[in-house]
Structures are given as structure tokens and as C-alpha cells.
Image 1 (tube, rainbow, N blue to C red):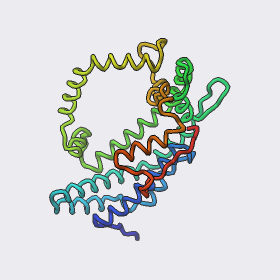
Image 2: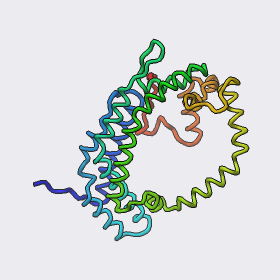
Image 3: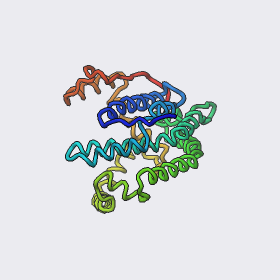
Image 4: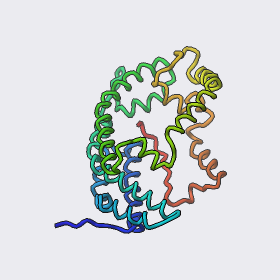
Length: 272
């Protein structure tokens, strides 16, 4: 007969840090192409003892007995535990979707490439028509996973309502963030209205400069990666000097990246 491990807040937080480190490293390795498959579910399984309903209640009890900054810290630990309980339930499905996307292929002209590589290629294709062509293929391949994405979102929402005891997603977010989402919506809408004219002017200026005069009035998302990378301006920020400029910039802000032991520079050139 197994027993559930209940940790105090300090012990819980210490083990939680290692859990987050392993998950972040796994996500980074997949994102940059070091790994071809995601194994997040295996990490969640190793730390399954962190995410139980009794542990949630233990953290809630400590939270209610505290005050001030300590109460806020314990509240955040409890919310993290709740999120972990949800993740533990759907980690395998999330891995399955991630790995399906990683294995998806796009055929463009005479070349077959991973879907992620196609997305990376869009950032460096200089011809507008080429990006449109490859972008349409990438968009269709990605959209094929939308039903699975929706299924996961629905499963997470149902679990969130069950674990927190609140079926209203707006109320849950307002409680966790300590703000009114309806008031935020009002303020953002007013800000959008006030900035529409200068935004449109600047948008058209930069679209003309980055995409060229032959662009569509409303370009498709095939050009998003190219715009974000500012590829036409790459001579300003060259590959050869990228690391040097990054390090000197952060040093001027007071951060010596080479002296911080838990920061490791990853400067490998990978196709994805």
C-alpha cells in the first residue's frame, strides 16, 4: 500500500525548482533541434509525488495560516501545485501531439523538410512569392493538428475547473492575477482606438520597407517569421557578431552573462 508524500513549503519549493529545470531543459532541447522527440511526460512521471490533491490542501492550509509576502509565496506554490496536477493528467497526450508535429513533413518543390524546418526557412527566404508558396504548405500542415490542439485545450479546461473548484475561466484568471479582465478589456480597447492611426501609418511604412512594394495589402502569416527576424536588416546585426553584441549589450545593463554559472550559451547553428 503506497502512501502520499506531503511536503512542507520549503521542501516542496526546493524539489519544484529541479522539476522546472528539467522541464525547461527538455523544452529547450526540442525547440532548438537537439532532440527529435519530446519526453516531458517522463519528467512529469518522475515528479508525480509533487502534484497530488493532498499536497494542494497542505499548501492551502499553510497559506491560510500565513500573512503578508509569505502568504503570497504560499499562494503561488499552491497554484503551481494545482497546475502540476493538471499537467500530470494530460502530459502523455501533450507529448503525443508535440511529437506528431515534430515528425510532420512538408514537401516544397523538390525538397522534403520537417514542419519546424519549414517554419525556420520562412524567416530567411528573401522572395515574397517563395514565402507565400511555402507558407501556404506550412499553414495547411500545421492546421491538420488543430483538432488535437482543441481536444487538449478542452481537457485542460475541464481539469482546471475540477481542481480549482471554479468552472468560470474568467473568474479563475481574475482571482489568480488580482485584476478585472473586463476592466482590462475596456482599457486595451481604448488604447487600441487611440493608437490605430499611428499604428496603421507605421505598419505600412515597415511593411513597405521589409516586404517590398509588391506586397499584398494584408500579407498572410507566411511572412511573420521573416518580419520578426528583420531579415532585410540582417547586415546591421550580423551572424558573426551576434554573440559579441548580445554579450556587450547585457554587460552594459549590468549582467555579465559569462560570469553567471547557470547560463550556458547555445550558439550552434541548427536547421530547425
